[in-house]
Image (cartoon, rainbow, N blue to C red; front, top):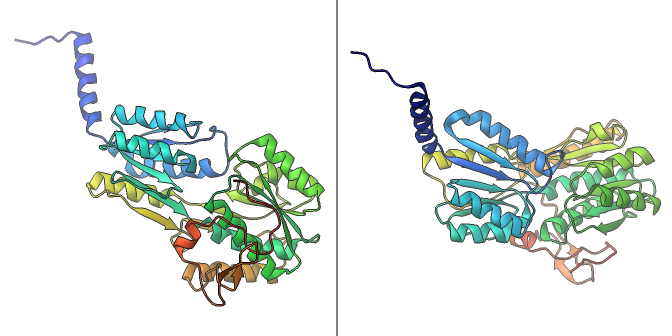
Length: 356
């Protein structure tokens, strides 16, 4: 006797079986605060997400969510994903901090990892890159390459991460050229094409011939190319957008971290951790040096990268004073990670104010 199963019933049975299997596969979400057509911060996170997806194949299910605003929108999105059963959420921008904590508190069975965060709960982790190490190389090169002795810096938000980068760049630039001056422009945004474009033009009009940035678009590089200035790739290699302007780049590598954390989830060994890696940990790469840079400067910059990699150079080594002239680091004294993570001041020599 043959058993005949109606086609519709068969399809329903198969789909139900697939659904059961899918429930056994960890669900992972990546949240980005920028639109998908981006080069820089979110681009590198998503490139790493693709590496992880290729590495794990069908062992996990990964979804990406673009253009999720920081603040309340990000918090609601994380709570929504947690309520839908996502096992692990990577919140890839600093401004997701409070939302990540609130969502994690409400959904303790969901694990949330926050990029550039500094507060953790039992089901959250934080991870960052020592981007200031890249600024040391950039500052050194900028100090050598400037003809006007004016370097323009397009800054995002007045937070320790950004202030560390500015200070590291300035100290390195001054080590190469004691006459260097920095002009810092605060935009209070991570990514705004129009504002970054105008800021770059204003800085060059004010005499800057080298641009640096903590913002996330290619506009400063494009403006530098158009107006005959120099610039550096931010988080990504941006030389394609300024083949003559680009001197080098700081390139983020999140892939190994994401793979290790997803593997921990699969192994059942995931725990709340704080990770802060740089060149030594291969989380930060210094991009190729432009042929515009004299060979001697390239060799000097390469030696700095080597010393950062092997740990023999701490770019925040005294004597260093604060902007107001008060003492910070005595001669030979080095800044601790705690000092760096709470940095909310300019070092001596930088003009301008920090917005509150």
